[in-house]
Length: 247
Image (cartoon, rainbow, N blue to C red):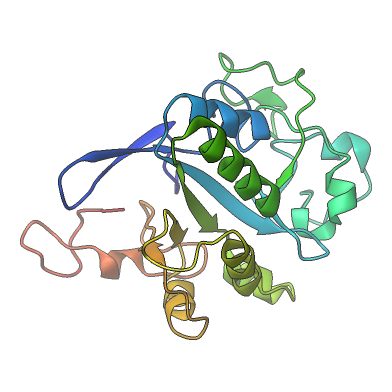
């Protein structure tokens, strides 16, 4: 699995202090990336809350782990004729108004029609809704104010090369939303991340992102966007091309 799967990831800082990051929110308790998952994560004391970000058809960044909708929503029931030739339903093919009609639920295996994690929140209940990046950052800011405890954010730009191929440039759109909410430099509690090396370089160079930036890596040799993970790895002797992975 390319991405990290635990609810709370432990990241060791320069001071060797662990940092708790709520991966997709409190996703072990309520459906991932829902408003409820983020509120619960904040209440549980997460120091950072993660957002995976994709675009809608009208270029609104929404918080969703996949570019597909069929694993975490009822899109196949509400819009049965909107799947592509591969049988999948893509967030990029729906306007925000259409996405707001969907009911979000616990992750399903779209091929088998079964719940991916049977002991988690029942997939058939809840009435959860999709959240825009703007709405989520506003929510976290509100919780930070009302609780007096600051939780940072950990947004990931999902498949930017694929978005551009589809005619949508996601990265500058995400940066504008981050700037709107005051996340512009390394002094702010924000770590921007991506699995695509070319986009990480573009974010820092062409797009001028001044904040903290993370190059994510998966367990395979290459990533979806063509990033050469094997080349980035080092072995125990720090020699390039080794097999020891890092993230």
